[in-house]
Length: 236
Image (cartoon, rainbow, N blue to C red; front, side):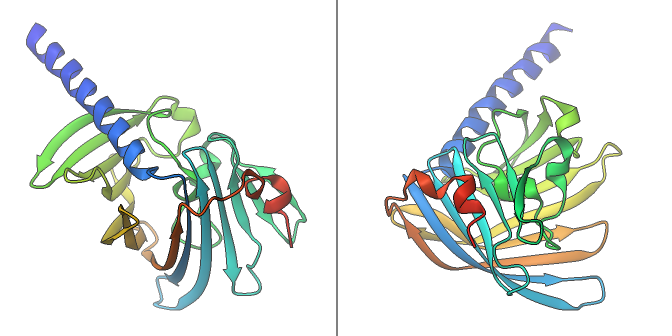
C-alpha cells in the first residue's frame, strides 16, 4: 500500500511544480494591453461580433472592457489585487463584487466565463496532479481547494512543454462530464513572449461557441496603477 501512496504524493508534487510554471508563463513581463475581435455563435448558427480590450499589470491586476458594439461598450471586469473581482454594467451605474461560483457565469453572452477573463493564477485556488504526457503536452488535473467557490468539480489543463503555455482547458462537472472547453492556438512571439492569437471557447452543453482573435498587442508599455481602479472601471 505504501508505493501507490508515494506515487500519489510524487504526482501531486509534480503538479504543483507544473502549476507554478504555468502561472509564471502566463504572467511574463511587466504589463500587456490586447485588443480582441470576438465572434459569438449560438446554437442556431447566428453570430454576433464584439470588441474586447484587456489590460494587465504584473500577476495581480487586470481590466477587461467591451468597446463595441455600443450597447455593450463600457461593460467590464476589474481585478485590482489578484483576488477581488468586480463586474461593471453601465446600465446599473455601479460595480458589484463577483464572489463564489458566480465567477463561472458567462460574460455578457459570450462563452468565456467571468473566471476565464479574470483569472491571473491557478496555484492559489487549485491542487494539481499530473495525469499524462501527450507528446509535446503535459495534461494536468486540477481540483479546487475550496469546492464552494467553483462551479466545476475539476479542471484539466494541457500545457506545452516547450514554454509552459496552456493550449487547452476543459471544465468538468461532478458527473465527470466536460461542460466547457477553451483552446489556445496561433501562438506568436511578441517582445520575446509567446501570445496565443486565437482563442476558442465552447459551451458543450448549449452548443455555443465564441472565437476571439487578437487584433493588436502592446507589451511592457508602462501601464499606471490607476488604470486598475474602480474609478477607471466605471469611467464612461
